[in-house]
Length: 239
Image (cartoon, rainbow, N blue to C red; front, side, top):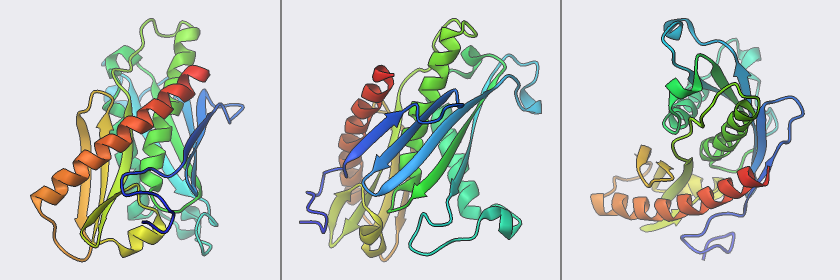
């Protein structure tokens, strides 16, 4: 039994509240247990210079953690004079994941920017940002369709993400901060609603892991992602 009382293949309580921002074209607050992330999608009627005149859109992301999202206050990146390597890595990961779900040509020459701000962190902030970011993106696209700025929905499939860890040779789904700090192996899985893999990040923190253990984590993550996609669909349909 885990410290939270969950079984090994159980997600934390997950809720997605859509339309939490007055001004953003699409937004939601996603809560994975005590990890809370505000996701906002903003439509920009232009594209980066490398895409101008090519008839394709773009999706990018920005990620940040509020100073007291963690146990101790962190300095804001602006006060450090640069974006940390971790922040850059997560921003790129979120953007890659969301672009995998969209036909960018159908989006037209416009950019959608996904802002993911961590209000409270208890592990799994990047997976929560991807899962919530997709909902915010979907709501922004629904608005583009309603305003007749695009004629067809460019979303090809849902995309969601979840973490897995190995502790004492056991695979655990959706690990929180306490479990993450004890894990021998830490992994993040990003998958689509069609069951295909977008990206896998897996690190042996204290030891290496076998192909069989990786396969077991993949099977466990797929079950969790199927649950997350149901929650995403419910949040989007209610809006």
